[in-house]
Image (tube, rainbow, N blue to C red):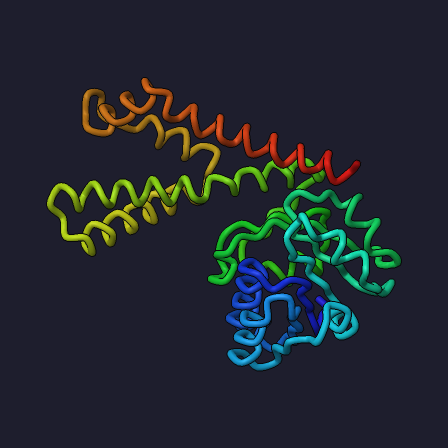
Length: 265
């Protein structure tokens, strides 16, 4: 894992989350970080908060100071931002652009050759959760393995599908919020309803860990016929509630692929 300085072109929520994770990791905290001035308020806050984090004067200064470069700008402006930069052959480039294939990004970063696609999520700041990586690389996997569970994909379309899976974030939070609000509406104090509901979902997810392929199907079916769980399950299924989640994912991947087609034109 030979990286002394990692630079971020774009300093939005995702880049900021990655930097918080790096600086919170005992193994990575001494890594030098250079941040883009594109979001000056967020960049200056990071620079004032952490040792060895500096705000560059320009995106080119980010590249000039860095061994690894994370491209984390809005996909719609990515090409115009990245094409004007001068990469070095020795740069390792990590793209977190959800709707840009590596073949497209590669055409922007010549003569740099080491290019990876990554799908992190904002909870990388807590050094938890999945991090999609394509293609495999021991050094990149080792570094980001301190920030979450790195899952290496065999081919790029698999990374595309994990991008689509992340689209259920707001819907999932809304389910949890709806359950907690129901508890409050029916007599639980708000803080207790939130505390119980969030702890309940946390425990449910931890129960799946380990032997996922066998445990999850068993837990789905593990309920008393006619009991409370069964009543809720049957009601939601009868109204197509679970099918809507798959329909939503279909819509997300369709949008993702449509954006790919547009970027290739």
